[in-house]
Image (cartoon, rainbow, N blue to C red; front, side):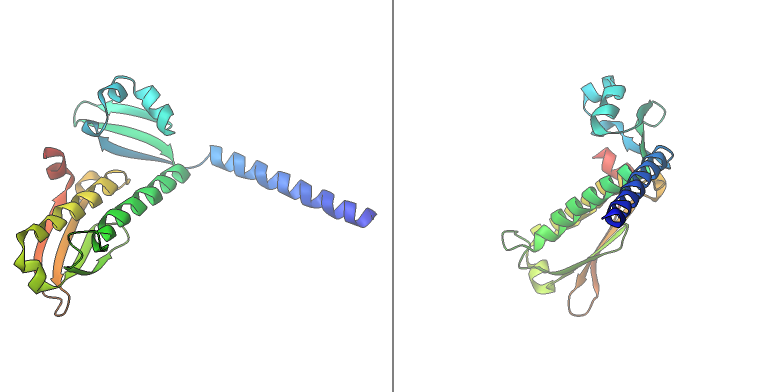
Length: 188
């Protein structure tokens, strides 16, 4: 019985020590700075950036008049969680085009992407794709979804680009290709 109590006490002490190390480690966590377009915030958020930061779990937020962006600071763990959620949303939007409810269902055969959403490849039934010009709307839908994701990365702004490539599903020949950039996205 004493042996079981001693083992339980050691386990409890180890758990407490692990929690304390984790908590102390999170205070010293690396911070991530990202610049998001000020136009993506509401007027109320821009008027009170401290409240905006607190409401969204950021460490701080600062308006940059020079380029019209807001620099947001958050810890690395929170940034990773945010990027995971944004990535899930982009995948849901883009891959959702393959669902039977989507007007693109008849056309899309597969969608591939790289890990950082800077390139999306959509393989289509070329005959169906070229028979209806409305299918070309999938290109901006895909590109803009990726640009929103990229705007929350810590990637330099000039590298926040996404290339959308539409290919023939059989031959892999490129049918259409378009580059999406942060600057062009914000001008829309």
